[in-house]
Image (cartoon, rainbow, N blue to C red; front, side, top):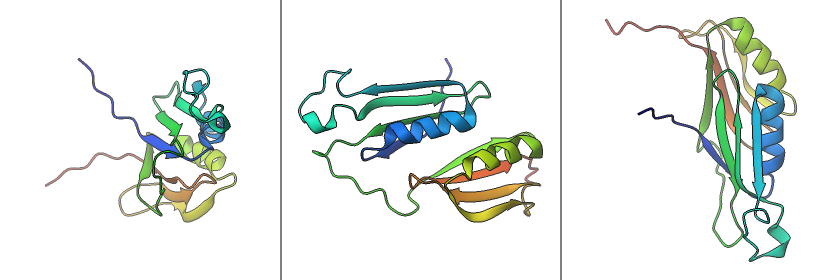
Length: 141
């Protein structure tokens, strides 16, 4: 059996736009099923909101998202979650960084750090904080 951990991002009405943006950055397959498609019709104003969404990139990237219904409480918070994207090379991370920074606020620019040859943090237009870095092997001794 294989288990995969996938970040599941919650939005309030803009999950589709966020998924489309992440798809433009990471490529792969985009799925965005609406409440209408899923048979959820309690609130006609929310028919086009996302009940199930995901992006699965060919490089292994995965993220899920949906729109929290207005019948449920929702507060995104400031830094309640970081989505970490780790790559094998500086070139790979730099390319993704260049795409992901579009419309985003850079918190910490992409640069060498004490734990990675390239590390950066940004907050995208949808309020999600992303951390990108090059993975390195650690020796606990």
